[in-house]
Amino acid sequence: MKPSQHHAVVIVGAGQAACQLAASLRQKDHIGPILIVGDERFLPYARPPLSKTYFKEGESQRLLLRKAAFYEMNDITVLTSSRVERIERAARAVILSDGRRLDYGQLVLATGARNRLPPIAGADLPGVMGLRGLDDADRMRGRAATARHVVIVGGGFIGLEAAAVFRAAGLRVTLLEAAGRLMARAVSPAVSDYFLHAHCGAGVDIRLDVAVRRILARPDGSVGAVELADGQSIAADAVLMATGVVPNVELAREAGLAVENGILADCFLATSDPAISAIGDCAAVAQGPGGPHLRLESVQAAVDQAKCLAERLMGQPQSYARTPWFWSDQGPHKLQIAGLRDGADRAEVEPSSDPARLLVRSYREGRLVCVETVNLPAEHMRARRALETEAAA
Image (cartoon, rainbow, N blue to C red; front, top):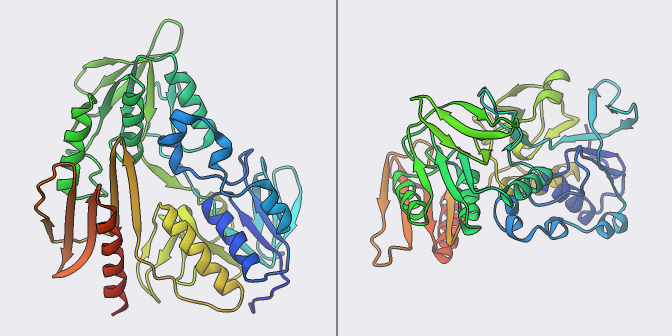
């Protein structure tokens, strides 16, 4: 379909990608209606602080990506507490759960992801929490205010960030990880080792290669302990399930769009229906024309995909090609990653006289593909520039 500056753009999802797309379209003089539909009761807000600064501050207004005045001034409609029930592709309309109908010229799915909850008995007990949205964070803060011992299931970014803030608040923390090292799917062994020692040094009890059998209740029905597969029981006042996320693809699947590990999109961020695009955590984007699909969960991907899509919707299509980068603040330690380690066959640890700093370069077939740094922000920026230059060569 030929893009038009007058068509209605309906964005399903109200996170970072949705907010950036709406802003970018207005910056590029899109004059048609823009509607953002979100199932939470808040305007679009930043999620990364939920496991970091928000735990200490609790100031939700500081999380907002844009103030309400921005949407009013730019004639962007945000429908909060609203859920899309189905997509009617032939009619180019979405139907909300309350029966309202929204017609679109272009539909954008920015539906994000939700917590992955393993099938563990007792995971629904009061005091067992996930951390994905602002309401989750408020429940976690409230529970932590009276807890003494928190058990965290999962040793990825969220679990470790939460462990750091719980320890800073004076709580006992036990972290359980099924793999043999921390953040195993995301970082090199050297980075895993660094953060294992850092968190253990801060007083976190970390147990690797363990499986949770069930979560046990106290006589009052609230969470009381976590039982491991070997029969050992760990007392707990609160349990945080930090076992990853799954993309929200149900709406797309029910509409007949191509879905695998995410909503499949080509390198221009179009789905199998040219009137529907997908961006952010829910989107598995082709890496170049006909290339493999990759789904990334990061602010950078959400923002850059939104900007790229805005170009196409305004008639200036560009293939999405950006160097991925990520960060994780865990107590006083800032982990930054440029590139992806997938398929790396060699890693080099830069010698350093400062034990608080770390730099790891990973290569695949002799080509630099990823640089991980801890407490070295200038090196991270240099790495991003180097990877972008190499990708463009």
